[in-house]
Image 1: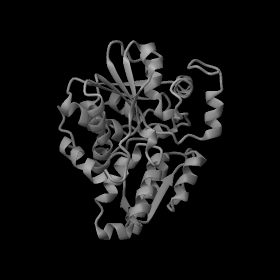
Image 2: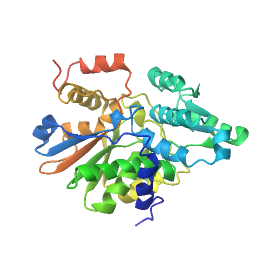
Image 3: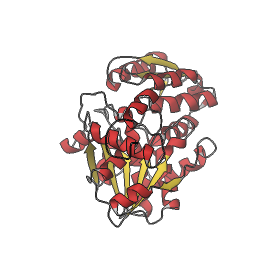
Length: 330
């Protein structure tokens, strides 16, 4: 087995570091999914974080580790939106300058939320990889500190605290469905869950369009993919050809990866709204999509879906949830 670059002890340590800055989010049952799947299905509501998504955990843990010189120089990152908002929020609370580099694919509501937090939001190119070029320039020429969206041990450890909470609320969990993008979320959760419950299955779910980690795992090494517009915009972007942490974590600890289509994501958004009464962005409901389509079999098990965020463009959300499809539209 490949040695993992982050330890369970680092996840445990992160919990105390971020405790005063993040919400311990609830786990709630989904009666409709439980009935549909013949399983006990629960939702972990990371959408209730102050920034509307799980990313606050990892960003806070990373920024809390900055020394005084690094805080003075400021931080920079590239983001599909939610990580940038989390970095901006943590930076504002710690009085640290922040630059957030994003592509033109990032929804306007996410860009504006970042600017409202006082960060310098820069729109560069048509992919996260292009935005990363500007972020690296800020490091090399301006001396800023990079805060990776996923490929950083402190970020991964912060996201892993979700797994610790999950095990406290669902000690008998058999299956955890996690939105998969760069791998920081699923890597941290898998590390935490498997340290205490090694036989629990961890399944990553992502969109069919530009599934970077899926393609990389299939190839056996990090590969570049073309980033495309998707309802699951928060799952876009590459994993970095020089990936240091998350590729190995996913290859070692993740049991399976499932792809869902745009139609299936839309149906899951509708189902989550009308049946569970929750607002969620497309990238947050891919686990539910996998269950609704039968791409993941859950019968007889205790299942947790990580509902990772709510920062959806509301006009688009209204259009999706009032459209035709399964999931209980009126």
